[in-house]
Image 1 (cartoon, helix red, strand yellow):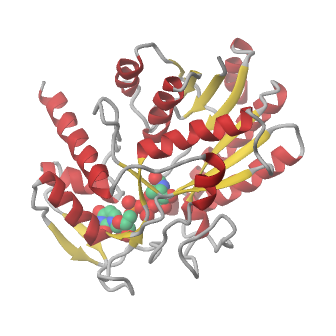
Image 2 (cartoon, rainbow, N blue to C red; image 1 turned 180 degrees about the vertical axis):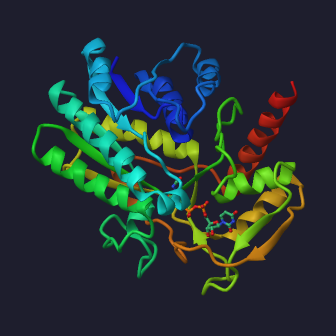
Length: 342
Ligand code: WQD
């Protein structure tokens, strides 16, 4: 059974990926310093898979500490690297903290991959690397525009670092560019636990609907889009998680054609902010309280994926509809509230 190290394993996409990996026959260990995540999320994942998950509480910016993981696990066959700060707004206020954390941890984990001869590496990238694209949908060959934030810049630089690392070693790599991950596992035992006021649209919707937030704003209704609000490619977090399992399968079976391989992970459909709100209201039956606010700095007008490469080369088929994404997100928010009161 292949042992996989998942960094940021207690994070939103990390925990869903751990569940998918284990359910597809992989052995998984996690490393997460819980600076931006809640270790209690492991309990939900352990209930789903019926086994314990070992998590190393280690700061990947500390190389010595990180090496202990590999000293204790000499048979790691792959690394999936999620660990990073990801708040766009915060990155604008504290760019150096983002460069130090996101790139320092990446360099250290790649050093360990080299030193301990780990053969396979999957990097958590983002559609943010495209910036404001001239043409949509974007393919993996769409030229990258300047990043709209230091967070986006760390993803662009991260891709360069991984590319140079794999070209100078025997490491095989894949870069996965997520569009907008939303929703929660159907068991409602794991989901997103935003820290503080959520910057992202869907947790802002569900927290407003449940009353954690009094109201929310739609950042801009004067864009050149169908209804004036921004267009994004929302993708269910379980579909994103399964793509990681398929990416590892491709590397372990040595079926990758280039090194690194790059894949867009989006549904290929774009929805506006107002359409997402309508889909939420339809599935939850809750009338959302919101107002139209000013545009948010750094927002891309419209982006969605051409996902043909992931479909043909990974055999990946995103299955969940926007309504299913909203339904699972709402059910998760209700669970968080019930857990608080229980
Ligand atoms: C989506 C749309 C907002 C909140 C970023 C990163 C991406 C990924 C996901 C980290 C935008 C609008 C939002 C609100 C709103 N990384 N919105 N009111 O900015 O597309 O992507 O987060 O996880 O790499 O770039 O996602 O959910 O923040 O915003 O109107 O209260 O919703 O303006 O148009 P984004 P988002």
